[in-house]
Every structure is written in C-alpha cells, then in structure tokens.
Length: 404
Image (tube, rainbow, N blue to C red; front, side, top):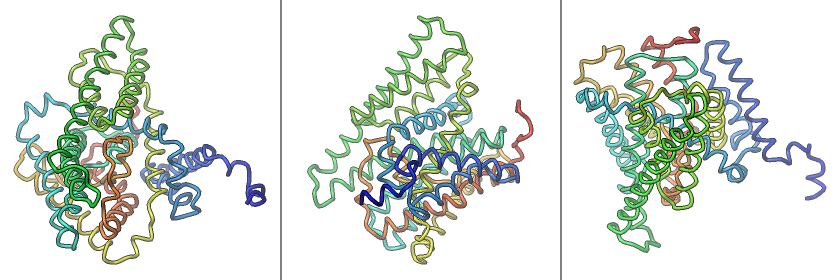
C-alpha cells in the first residue's frame, strides 16, 4: 500500500489540493461556457462529475468530511444571502402575491408526496422526501441571478420565494423527521417527544440569530464602523452564529436565514455586504455545487423506474408552481412562466449538512434513496439551465451592464 502511495503525484495525496484543483477546473470551464452563452455554474457541474463518484472518484463523501467547516461556512453565506432577499414589508403589503408564492410551495410538497406514494413509497418516507422538495435550491437560483445580473419583478418574486420555500421546507421536514424517528426500529421517543425536540432546535436557532444580530448591531455602533467596514463585522457574527448552532445542535438553517431577514428588514443603514463579498460568494456557489455534483451517481439515471418517478416529480414541481400563480394578476403570463421555471431547482438532504439538527437521511429505504438520487442527478444536469432559461424568459437579465 505504501509503495502504491509513493507512486502517486504529491498533489493527489493532499485532500485540500484535490478540492483546490476541482475549484480551479470549475472556474476555467465556467468562464469558457459563459463566453459561449451558457451558465457559468455548469463549470462546477462538469468538474464535479469528472472528479466525483461518477468520474475518477477523487472527490467523495470521505474527503468532504475533512472540509466540513469550510463547506458550512460557504453554506452560511448562501443561506444568509437567501434570507437577505426576503422583503417582509413587500409580502405584508402584497398579501395576494405573497399568498400565491406560499401556495406554490405547498403544492410542490403535496404534489411530490402524491406522486411518490403512487410510485410505491411508504407514506412516511414519501412525506420526508416531499418536505425536502418544497425548497428551491438557493445555490442554483442565487448563482444564476448573479451570473446574469438579473433584476426585475419576476426575479424579485422568485428571490422571495426561495427564502419562503426553505423556511416552509424546514418546518415540514422537522415534522416528517420527528415522525420517521419515532416510528423507526430503534425509536427512543414517541412522536410528540420527537416533535418537541425539533421545535426546541428551531426556537434555539432563532434565538441564536437574534443574539448574533444584536451583537453585530451593537458592535457596529460602538465602533462607529463605516459602511466599508461593516461586512467584516457581519462575517464575524455569521461565523459566531454557525458555531453556536453547531455546538448546541440548534437549527443553523433557520438561524442563518433569519440573520439575513433581520439585516434586510431591521437594519436601516445602507448595506454594502453584497458588493464587498461578491467574489467570495461566487466562489462559494461554485464550491458547493461542484461538491453536490461530485456526490451524484449519474448511473441512477439509467434505472428506468426511479428515473421515470424523478422526471414526473421534477415536471410536476414546475407545473404546480405555475398553477399556483394563476390567481394573481401582478405578473403577466410570460412572467409567471419565467417564475415557475426559475424555481425548478431542488435541494437534497445532503445540502442541509450545515444544519446538524437535521440528521436522519438514513431512515430512507433503498427505493426512496434511488428516487432521490435520480432527482439530484436531474437537478445537477438540468436545474441550472432551466433556472437560467427562466430568468432569460422574464427578460430581466443584464449581463452586459456592470451597474445593473
């Protein structure tokens, strides 16, 4: 074994070098694809597929565990930015628009649950997967918006929906996870006890967000920090939030989303966070999606039963989102099509690793895991493209406008 290791290039013996090489490859391929009019995020897809379990196998779950804190930090930025796009004042002033966006989230979950049950999955595990499928992938959506410099009424509504969908998915997932745990072979608590434990983690996560935001607000005022200095203080507060959630098993997903919501809706001063850390966020998007692609076994797309179920669920999510938008007259038909397409991407349980309060994907059966794997493979291959197409369809992209 030692002789075999000695024959390997030195860079292949360093997990950090492998991750760095993958990120470099994703950036180079992404720039080349963007120059030809394709979404830059596909560079991360190609790099992940080449280096991951569907390619050379250099990037796998064992390697990623070594850099869990790095990925958690990148996820923290993404979740915070998702929360920062939620405009509570607009949702309050526009109840019909907000209502149809919430309705779309609920229909996505119910529709996915019905299809999965019809496909032969047990009621509990179908509810577990359906809860996950409520959420829109914030990495895909935010990255596509950033790459295309998209802004407008459809993009604004979709950005609010990403945050809403993740919050609703988190609540639904907590309930379904409590059910799965309480009905497993090794259950130590009943459903009500498990539900109380999940609720406690949510409350604790919200409390940590309020405390960390309060510390940020106090620190900036005591230091009289100028606008250009506040992002550094905010990053420190976000890392503190993530660390406290990690050691207390609080809901980091809720806490980081809430940090963004508080900054957007409570902070009255100009916020230059986005401009200061845009490069770091773009790298974070590529890193997270490359890791997602690296763990996706494309072979699952060659099993017709999981693939057919996954295709039906994927299409139904788009169709049900479009159906939910019908009662509102705030957007034109083309804008509604665009919103539905731009919200097509989905998250996987593995994407919630930042939230160690949500442990339990092992409760899924082999059939359920196969469907979820096929869904994630589809999402990696077509999710970014459909999201990008939706933003184009809305006619709200401004790639050539640096100040758009």
